[in-house]
Each structure stands twice: as structure tokens, then as C-alpha cells.
Amino acid sequence: MKLLTFTLLLVFVLPTAVLVILFGSLTLLLPRRIKKGILRYYRHELHSIRMELYHFGRLEKLHPADTLFLLEAIDIRVEPGPGQEGGSRTSH
Image (tube, rainbow, N blue to C red):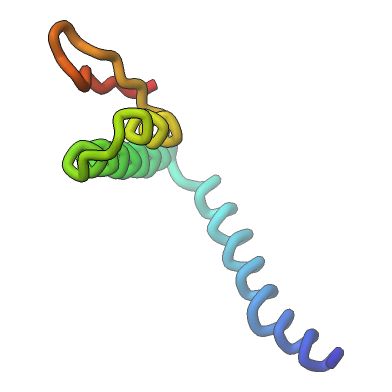
């Protein structure tokens, strides 16, 4: 049993830890411009996911409370516009 645990640790955990440390140290060496570009990319991806969930909630005709709960869970505020049922979307 101890041999199996040691083997699993050696095969899975150790290489993962080494890769995480290597990747972390390499990102510290990257120029600031590249770091900002990477962060901008991930922010854009997160925004795309939020919008897809918003439209999915609208298309599937979820109950308004469920849709609002879903949007709040992914950090989007819904503010009703004049004469609109749903309102406009704004991100925090």
C-alpha cells in the first residue's frame, strides 16, 4: 500500500508541482505588456461566458428570478430599462 501511494505521489503530484512552480516563475519573468495581454484575454473569455449564460437564460424562458440568480452568481447586474421587461446588462 505504501509503495502504491509513493508511486502515485511520484508520478502525478510531483510533476504537477514542478510544472506549476516552473510556469509561475516563468510568468514572473514575462514583460508587463505580455502579462497585461494574457489578463485581457482571460477577461474577454469570462465576459463571453457571461453573455452566453445571459442569452441562454433568456432563450430557455427561465423564470425571471432564476435568471437573475444566475446572473448574480456570475457577477452581472441587471438594471431594468424604461419600458423594458428585462433591462440592460452591466458588468461590475
